[in-house]
Length: 136
Image 1 (cartoon, rainbow, N blue to C red):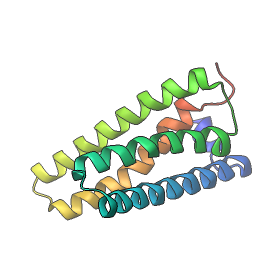
Image 2: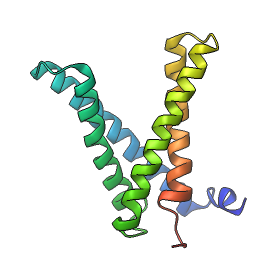
Image 3: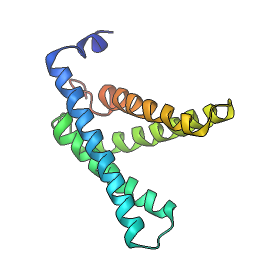
């Protein structure tokens, strides 16, 4: 509970803002890569998506490690945690979308639900586990 209360401190509020900026930059990078690859190649959309997400994963990790959390831990620990956490968040987002659609929600509305779920889950997991401060 103290960690949740601490989110309102000025230092933590800045970390939340930095997290949002890295997320926005990564989303723009992802979209730019998708549209560029789609326009310049004949690769299937699944390959384009996978390539853009893979590059985005690296960019997101580096942005959060160096800017959001400013090197709060070694890459040897943070890197594997980031990959594991991101895989779990991707899986949870897929489950949210699947459950929403199979419960009768229109697909377009389910995408909006995922768009709300993913950043919140990502922040919670990365802030409180992947890049947590003060503990090894």
